[in-house]
Structures are given as structure tokens and as C-alpha cells.
Length: 225
Image 1 (cartoon, rainbow, N blue to C red):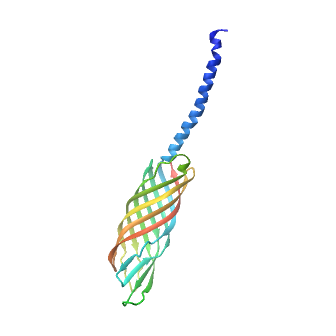
Image 2 (cartoon, one colour):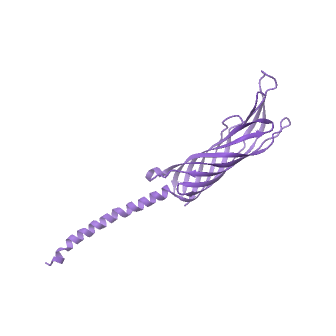
Image 3 (tube, rainbow, N blue to C red):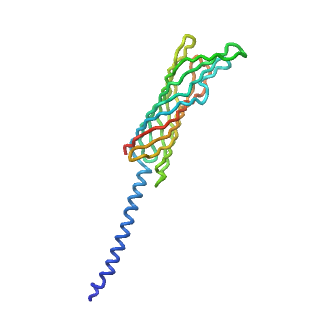
């Protein structure tokens, strides 16, 4: 038998070993690329929210004679985002119609008189810059995110025969944080917390104060990437 014929078993074993290495290496490379795509998406995401407006403090407090506060109320929201990997930009809007109650103390030492003025139209909108950490493997199913940006709050107050409250539009700083849970390809659920921080300064509340319009919600969204 020639030397070339004797060399065939060795070459066959080498070829089989190389094929085995490729068989393991190629799926591993594809999985790594897939994991990276999950961790660093690029494209649009659209989310609808439902939750609650949670007042953190009284709406206004003018000394010992007059105060006002919003009730906890169901709120709705809609958000559109574009992600560049781990960073994104977002436009979102929220609406709630909390009830406004005013308390008046007519004499020093007397009990306050509560006057329910009715529902208030409260509109909130913001443009946020977002960041979410890049997670890999099974950890990428739950993805936290954080953001901040400028916003605006529009309040349309109810009117009564006793009180005339001037409607207002005020600048706000918007802070947001939450977590996104992947359901299936394209679909996800979000737990979202937003705070619109602004300065309240409208008649008859002559004392300027910082107001927090706190909105916590759950949403369902779809990613176009």
C-alpha cells in the first residue's frame, strides 16, 4: 500500500475533527450575535399605559386659610421611543382628571370647610433621554431603563361661584424609571414610574411651590426592530 493510501485515515480523522469544531463554533457565534441583538436594539418602540396619578403632597397651601389637593385618579399614557443601542429618545404624554378639593378656614381655630370643585383636566407631556444597561443571555428578558428631560404640564381647573382658579401651563422636569419584560418577538410589558416636577403659581394660590405630578403605570408595547 502506498504512502498516499496510508495517509487517508489520518486526513479523514483531521477532517472529522475540523467539522466537529465548526459544528460547535458556528452555533455559538450565532447565539452570541443573537444575544447582542437582544441587548442592543435599534429602532422604534410604541407603548400604551394605564395607571394612577398619585399626589405626593397638597396641590397648594396658602398659609392657614386656604389649601387645595388632588385626588388619586386613573391616568392614561402613550409613549414613542427610538433606541440607538443602549440609549434612546422618547416622546410621551399622559392624561388624568383628578378631583380638586379646596379647604377653607374662615376663623383662626375653627375647623376647615371642604369644598369639592369637581374634576380637573391634567395633561402632561415630555421629551426624555433614556438609558438602559446592556444585559446578555437570560437576564435580557427583564431590562430596566432610566431617563430625564424637559416637559410641560397643562392644568384646566373646574370653576365655581365661589372660586375662580386660573388655568395654567407650566414648564416641568420629567424623570422616568422602569423595567421592560419581553413577552414574545416584538411584544413586551412595562412597569413605568414618572414624575413631572414643576412650579405651581396661579391664582388664588399666591404661594409658589414645587409640585410633583407622580404617574405610576403598567403598559403593553411593540418594538419595530
